[in-house]
Image 1 (cartoon, one colour):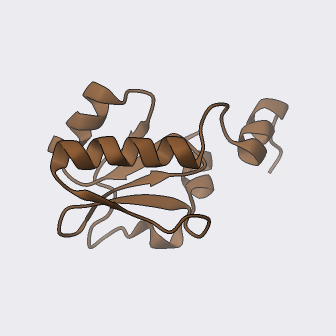
Image 2 (cartoon, one colour):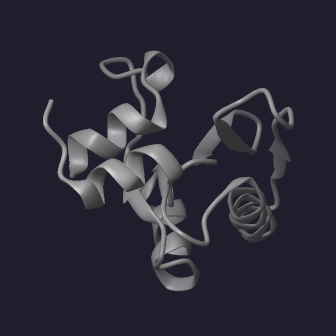
Length: 110
């Protein structure tokens, strides 16, 4: 794949101002709005999970990108976190994102 210099920089470094700290902050805000909690292992996972009995959202640590389940949660992102790109209905019986990295999904949407 021949990426131009801007896209190559995003793939290598991610967007300026986005990283693990921002992903955790977003997850904490969404979890508070949903009365859920945050699960992740620092330095180990590419995604930070918002859990409410089950995983209801995954926020990428590399890109301002989130997979969400349900329109109510998508509304929380749109109202309070417009800088995060949503991939609504993140997973179902037909689609399980576990085999995809945030980079795969970012390149697919670019």
